[in-house]
Length: 71
Image 1 (cartoon, one colour):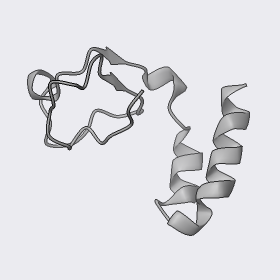
Image 2 (image 1 turned 60 degrees about the vertical axis):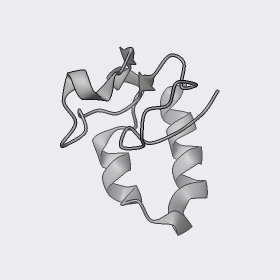
Image 3 (image 1 turned 90 degrees about the vertical axis):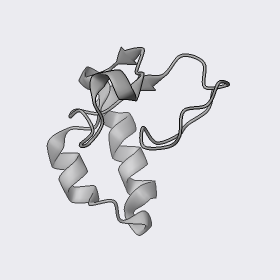
């Protein structure tokens, strides 16, 4: 398994590409994204994403809360 951003360059070693996000990424067409499976139903909830705000210092707590959401 490899984790990468949908904005990263496609690579022939990517294999099956799964997007886990509640919203389709801006600036990426569905054809250009080459996404095989979009699992928006298991993405972090909007309130959790808003709280996190992509602040790296909050990541350990974000991961804990996200795992709780998945249960």
